[in-house]
Amino acid sequence: MPTFTTYDGTRLAYRAHGTGEPLVCLAGGPMRDAAYLGDLGGLAAHRTLVLLDARGTGASAEPADPGTYRCDRQVGDVEALRAHLGLERIDLLGHSAGGNLATLYAAAHPERIRSLVLVTSAGRALGVGTTDEEWDEAVTVFADRPWYQEARAALDATGPETPLSRVHDITAPFAYGRWDAAAREHAAAQTWQVRWEAASAYHGEGAYEPERTRRDLAALTAPVLVLAGEYDAGPTPAKAAEAAACFPHAELVVLPGAGHFPWVDDADAFARPIAAFLDPEVRTATVDGVRLAHRVLGPEDAPPVVLVHGRGENRTTWTEIAADLAADHRVYALDLRGHGLSDRPGRYGFDAFRDELGGFLRALGLTGATVVAHSMGAGAALLLAQREPGLIGRLVLEEPPAFVPLDPPRPPAERPDGPLPFDWAVVPDTDAQLNAPDPAWREELSAITAPTLVIAGGPVSHIAQDQLTRLAERIPGARLVTIDAGHLVHTGRPAEFLSTVREFGLR
Image 1 (cartoon, rainbow, N blue to C red):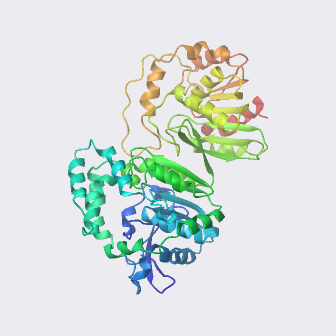
Image 2 (cartoon, rainbow, N blue to C red; image 1 turned 180 degrees about the horizontal axis):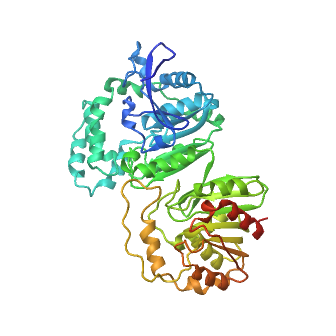
């Protein structure tokens, strides 16, 4: 493991795991070996995680002065790590007790923070604590779990003399959204990962000056993401919101069904919002409680174009098209719900995507924008143009569904093995609608007022081309162009696709 020497001569260790730009990660516990963070639910696929072993934990050396275990006295360790890495500014993540250290560092060195992520972070540094009574009330969310009564009784039997390690063992089931085998294994590791005597000193007297910290944070211009677990008792989502309000530019995300270790409860749901937040090219907008990731390119004052992908794809399918259009347009490439870095709420359908696209256009002030959409996304855009004729300026539909009942209907699809870049629930939900679409989706094509271009992929496409011809005929003034590329015209024949779209009159 690589090491460096911190301000008082203590040798500290860290491990670097993953790909991409560095994300410095501070472990909680307090004073727990950073190994428990693992790859943070797959976040290592997006960033290089720099996992610091706090002094006296993991592979880091014990300090000569045990008083330096106190949280505020470890701020210098984070600064020494930054200097060692040669970074002018850092992206910093703190979990649980480590969130206090991350907060103190941000207050002391606001100019060194590029972005800050606080994960189920205890708010002592901000004066936002959780009382025993509040914790007791919060954990009643688990009252129907089979382990609750026994764990509750064991906790009630603890007292001031109960060793901290024993208290942690008893409270472990309350720290996870599901007390399953993965959670039990993760919790069991704390027995040897935590430096218990140092843990007692971490929050020691004098460690925090909340009023001063909140005052100093006024100078923090970097964005802050605060993640809370729906079932976490410390901090609860309400407490996390209170902590988020202490930062000038903070966003709160509550992870459904998650506890204090959300990457153990649902790795994908944990990693997605953080990856989106940390990517400087990705922005998010919230529509009906669903966070939608999107990329924006091109001049701010240029005419807007919104690109909408098909099923199983995401905004990256438009990379070549977006780069070309961005020369003279403001381009918005969207991840629909269940895809890419957007939320996966588990509820899908062409009507849901329709409403989501409309909400996205309104949220970003894009009324009158050109919408270029493929396949499933084209179906959503088609339905939106029917329902809200004035919302879309010009409409390009690449290989859209014609919403003619499939004959024969699609049989139930089998989920492929392994991880997927989208929520598999999208497939059965949309297949059901393709098999038996709402008749109004065809009958109301005449309500579309936006100038419309339908791009067909020719005979090698799985979409019946005669149906696309009839669809175009029912849309007032629509133009049909066939490019023999199959279903993925914009990736198979991008030059012809762009030429056709520009000839259609993108302004």
